[in-house]
Length: 172
Image (spheres, rainbow, N blue to C red):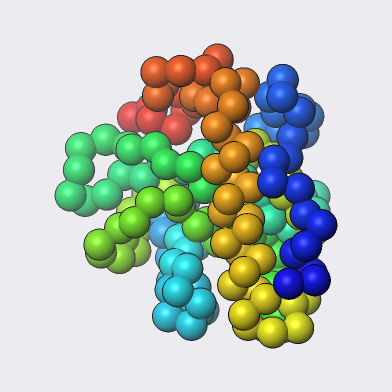
């Protein structure tokens, strides 16, 4: 659709993250507005917004997430795309930090420990005119995150490739 037509499919330089990235966030997964999975079909894992986000531009970001689920030992790493801001389509008053982890989970994991290594900016917030365009935009964000992370300079050496230090994601 028109809003998403001219967007790039890869973001960030081929040499890897540049200042101010990487940014680190962590916290326990909390309940959000309940729209991601139920209304949009794109589940998100929300963490409390902290002062680290005060100077961060509202928008969509990408990077790596790690989760320590009750059903597993230690942290496991996944690619992610996330929204930081007020979500203009829904007119939220409060800022939220919502990670869409690019993995299919069978169960909710509220209360799980989550760490986010934010590596780059995808786009500014957009007030999409329709829900279909919002869903299309989020799915494009997911593809941009995958494409952008699928380069050696953006890969984590903890995952057996790349040179990017993601040891904080799995540190006990």
